[in-house]
Length: 165
Image 1: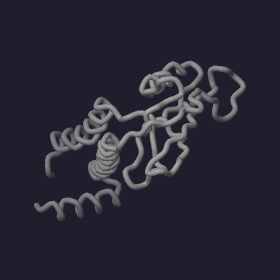
Image 2: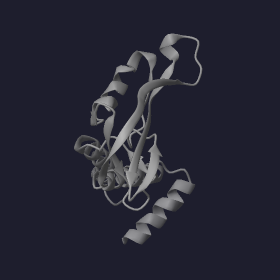
Image 3: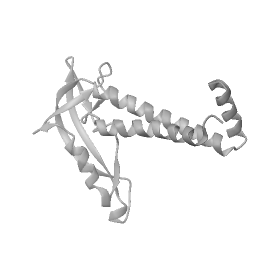
Image 4: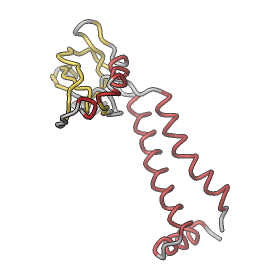
């Protein structure tokens, strides 16, 4: 059976509600998303860095919640940097946007540790051609590896269990 025949068979099976076909398309979607995410993070690792001015880096509450434990927080940043004689202003801390409840706010501090700052000076990673796109934290190998495992493990488990039947 060719790959094209298998894909068509899985497509018709998913339309009919076949469990194996539905699992096949779910892992295809998840693997593509995780694979793209890993590729994107690898590209960000290669972005050039410039010195910038950090105006603000703090945890901010997002949304409204009455109970303290139900409040949700996110790292917010404000920084300025210059590329090719033009000034830009950025707000993204990392490519992994993380929101945490009041009980897990300590996780947000891990993002702050990734920011290379010296007083109000900070390293800013910017897109090579779209300079307005920038981050303060370079993606790490652990996160990229994690996404690659998420991209590759489901297909391996799927074919180990079902084969090409």
